[in-house]
Image (cartoon, rainbow, N blue to C red; front, side, top):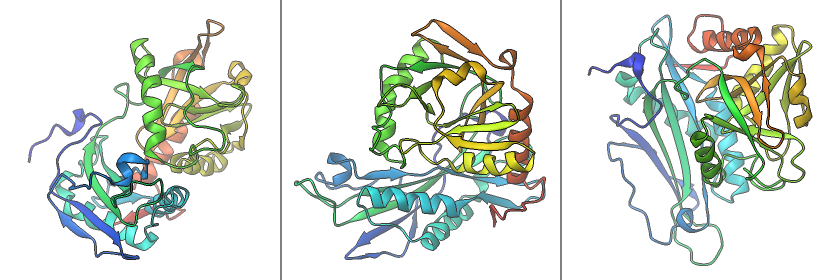
Length: 336
């Protein structure tokens, strides 16, 4: 198999296997590997009608020592259970989830990009209601599928600053809605905002809270963070997804000497930050070079539009742990 590993985009590529388990009659079936890329779904499945679906995203890396590392799958398992609970779906057991991730990665090992290419194997678990209902109520059957795809950078810019535009015309999630879980509907609601931003030349948007349009919410499909006066500042609210990457960065930030503040962050603080970034599994860290506010026609520029020193330190520190270049003192990696 010959792939141009260094020039991979971020998209779906057919691999050898995906893995599946059904929840039926109160129990999960033994997970099965399959080469089938399709699903035979009932026309009244709750995933199609009532939004009973959630997903996760994590990565596997081929390290400097040749070993394969999967980054923090236990946290993804717990977050998927949280999403399932809120959407009243069956919750996959943590150990079953981790075992399925391990098995599907091993089965597709030839698609794990070589060390040094900057690419990784993206792992996508998706859970949805496969049982039929016409009334608005939970399904009695669920399907968990985990597939993989080799990927390059999420943004074509890679680890280079992106331009962001504030969007006050759309809400990503309601204040007491599903913003804190990884529900598919959240991302469906963001498509119009994302498309409009791209047409204006901005790779990402900055959402404000839906209630007052006063506080920073998320940056596209990623968590927002900023650096100011020796502090790592990141928004916290019920409508923000708890990012596993952000959780990791907060730990590393403290170890590197920054004080961490996870709190409501007012949009008026945008003018005070030294650096800003968006973080998540797909992009790891995307430094934010500037934020444009259409309401005031003002652009906030960070570090002269270049990636700042703290964004660089945090990015390279986390990547070094994921690739086995530095000790994994927190036990974050599952090594195959």
